Image 1 (spheres, rainbow, N blue to C red):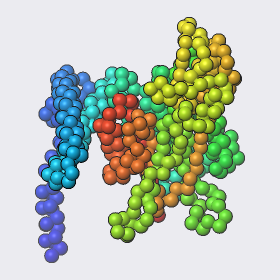
Image 2: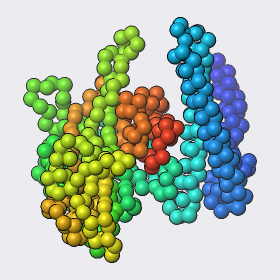
Image 3: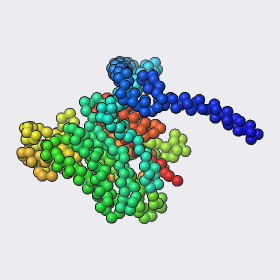
Image 4: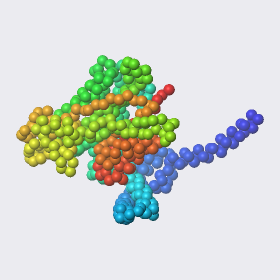
Length: 466
């Protein structure tokens, strides 16, 4: 019997050898050009240097752009049909089962076409990114990240699309990591939305993590208060350092920020036995209108229908018409007015960059950079009090992370939140198998919902380690 089993194992190994060889060959295939390569390096060289590959990819991109135009026409046609059916239903005294079922079918067809529209844009975004990487000679920035903090294993995934805009001013940081004075890991992620150029947002990407580490290292120990102070100091330091550069060249660039940091709770609150050492907390810092939302389960998985997933806001958008923000702006001489969207405006003309600017506004009330909005009085603008019409002071919220009910956090730029509700974003992401897939799916839905802005979504999830 032993020999028989060994013989069967040998046969199985022999049978699996061709499959392993086929799988190895499969990994080195350029499907666009329908060519197979002996090694990963030769495949990479082909994709980088081959004129054939470049022509094939350009042809596929042209085909996908045409497909997008066709899908737009299909969407318009389906929406017109839905409107016609709605008019029929409203004109009938008793609802017709045929018209109701017809409307349901049309709505399903529309959702399918919108899904294909988002997928077409995803292909074009990937092609654009590959082209940029090839031209710059740099590697693609990572889209996923794993880290361990306390008792939690963190997983993050991100998607970042230029969408229909001429330039990409969204950025993200997926690998923030530094230590507390005691040597405990603090890990985090961030999404930033630049405006009036990318100098400020690129400066944030390069320096924010370093400044967080530097400010935390000056504290005696890790507590909610010391981490909050470190984040506030790092934001102020990063903003001031960029403004020093902006003053030299008179740059208007600015950026929002939504930051999430996970850290171990070293001193659990008295009387809360469930918060043992190693449990984690989440700090969210917001500057501007990028937003963070947590997916939280209400109820039990064993109940009929399972647990209900709720969107719990972790930040409040800094819009100019938010009552407290508007009071602060107006107390310093600025005005808040509606021009397409609500904006903060300087009170009069100024001289900036060698030009006379009659009117200048911004669609957020807090941001990094934006030299003119912070120091308008330096540029001959009359009626502005010192201190800035907008500020880079973050609003900070800290919550316990309860793995039994808290599922994941979505951080995204305003291009997402302008067309997708927080609850819809949670529902879309919860149905996906990984953080990166969740972020990609959310952007497909966002783009299909007529967002023309740069769009970025980052999903951070966790699991409890035994």
